[in-house]
Length: 176
Image (cartoon, rainbow, N blue to C red; front, side, top):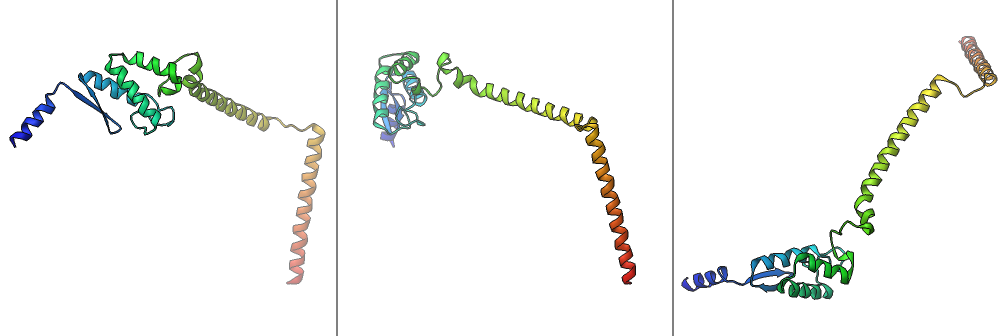
């Protein structure tokens, strides 16, 4: 029990800090640097595995980038310096959250603009349909000649229907 307590105290109060990423241990003398390493390993994307960060990827290039990241963090480089190095070497793709620049305006603002255009289009279509629906109820698109011809056809149809129904009644009474 005493040995366990001594080992536990040595590990807890040791000046060395471990950052474990993807099963690999990276030793740092300061816990702040280990935290920076972990944060950047989760924030930077593997160039080969498009939807995995450096911490999760098993690709060889991810291992190389983790080693490069480890060296830079251990040498005291800031997060921004490391990100700039990675972007210069691998492009904006390596960042999960690309910076807002002229090259990424569409990425950042495109979805909002498309949503706005869709809402405006929807409103305009609804308004147009309401207006055209009201106009078609109040006025007819037929000329006066066409309206007269239509009413005559409807009257003739009503007369024919009336005659047909009276003929049917006569036939029914004759059969009874």
